[in-house]
Length: 269
Image 1: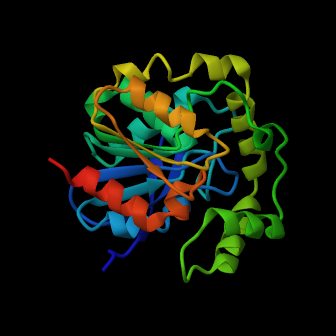
Image 2 (image 1 turned 30 degrees about the vertical axis):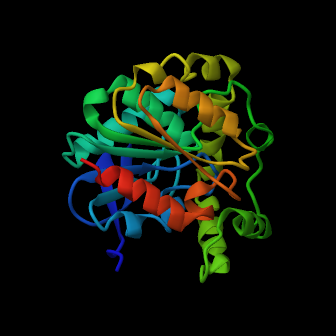
């Protein structure tokens, strides 16, 4: 039986940040991707199952969710330090770090910069190796309810999930005052070609010392599966797991397989 998921808030230097927490034991922090309506809720099919043997925490990155925002351009440097500050505020000296997409990019930079703060690292369809931008980011417009609902049909593939309820929850997040403006500042930084070159992970991945699991969907059209092979080659001793019939949103497309593989990896001595 899954542990109950509790919504909490913590005060950081920019203001309050919301996070979801479940379980007890060695901590694991889950870092979400860049989607406009994304956030801690992206892990709703994973937090409970992964909390069976550990304490699982999934924060909204600064700029996402109902927490406070910054009235300035966001940066990779700030997002990486956000993870450290989140650990500090909760008195977590080190933890497992699991990052999906943009969260995987931040996780890679974090493991490179602060190896003493990482027990094990899980990169899920992680960004960071490709220097090109995505059309969905360069031509962003706040999505309507129907668009969010349609996206969920491809991103969430688990029986019994109420996609209508999730779509309503996400559209409410999209309507939070200041959300669109904050997201535009995030994309301004992430879409700058010089930024993407400066924070590319190719030279950093070989320096990562934490035991690393790389998981990817074979049908990923956002971050090509070729990047999974590249990351695996660059991180010495890493383990690579590819999921069939799975695209970019691995945690919600194949949640049972994902939870099993990640849970077993984190549980190993």
